[in-house]
Amino acid sequence: MVSFLIAYATWSGNTQEVAELVEETILREGMDVTAHRIGLDPMPDPRQFDAMIIGSFTWDKGATPHEVKDFVADVGYKPDNVYVFGTGDTQFGGDELFCNAAVKLAKFYESRIEPLKIEQSPRGTQEKTVIDWSKGVLQHWKHLHALKY
Ligand SMILES: Cc1cc2nc3c(=O)[nH]c(=O)nc-3n(C[C@H](O)[C@H](O)[C@H](O)COP(=O)(O)O)c2cc1C
Image 1 (cartoon, helix red, strand yellow):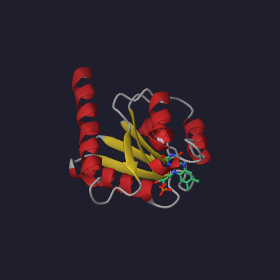
Image 2 (tube, rainbow, N blue to C red):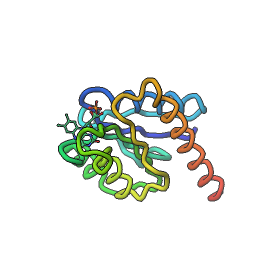
Image 3 (cartoon, rainbow, N blue to C red):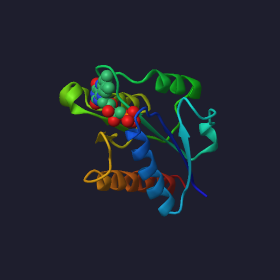
Image 4 (cartoon, helix red, strand yellow):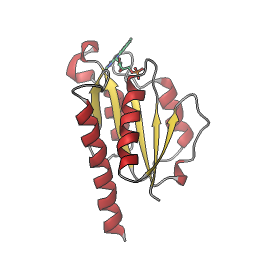
C-alpha cells in the first residue's frame, strides 16, 4: 500500500488540526498514513515511506520553529516527494511573512506543488481548502508514479 508520512510541528493545535484533516483525506482515498509530531514522537525514517508531507507553523517574523529545523537536519537528506503545509496569521507581518516557514520548507525540499497556507485553524471555511490540497497531493503523487512505471 502507498504510504505517506505526515510530520508536523504544533504548539497551540492549529497545525495539528490541518495534519488531521490531511490524514483523514488521504486515508479516505485508500492510502496508508503515519502521523509524526515533530519534537515529541520518536524520529521516523522517511525512506520507509513513499512520500513525506511536512507541516509547520511560523514563528517570530517569518521564522521556522527550531524543532522543525532540527527535524530537517535529522532527516539529513532531501526525499524525492515532499509536500508542505503551514499555518500562520497575517497579523504578524502581513502577506509577506504569512506562513513563511512553509514557503521556506517548500523551497528547500523543491516541492512540486505550492505549499498550503492556512490562517489559524482550518475548521470552517478553510476546511475545503485543506481537503482539496490533500487531494491535489495525491493526484500529483499518482501522476508521478504512473510516469515512472
Ligand atoms: C510570537 C508569534 C509570532 C508569530 N509570527 C508569525 C509570522 O511571522 N508569520 C505567520 O504567518 N504567523 C505567525 N504567527 C502565528 C502562528 O504561526 C499561528 O498562530 C499558527 O497557527 C500557530 O500554530 P500552532 O497552533 O500549530 O502552534 C506568530 C504567532 C506568535 C504567537
